Image 1 (cartoon, one colour):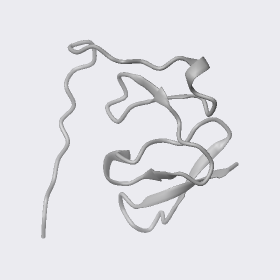
Image 2 (cartoon, helix red, strand yellow):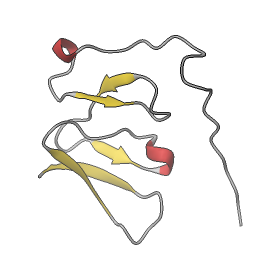
Image 3 (cartoon, rainbow, N blue to C red):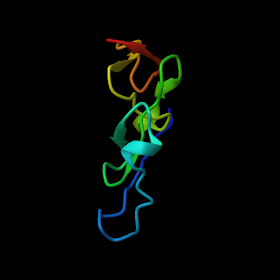
Amino acid sequence: MSVSALKCRECGTYECKNKSENECPTGLVTNICDCCFVCGKGENEKCGGTWKMLGKCGKGLFCDRDENVPHSAGICKRI
């Protein structure tokens, strides 16, 4: 058995390199710690994974993954 953890620093205690809507054709999503704005993943890109480290899907997309497998990776698909 293995155990792993992620500890995010408190939001506002570091500078975010926030993306703008103009830089992100797939829309903005929050990063793994929900503090900073990054570009959402596009259609057919990897998403999810442990702590969603592979990223979150952009607008009009969802992370199609095996819900029966905790922290599984998936692929961004159209809603």
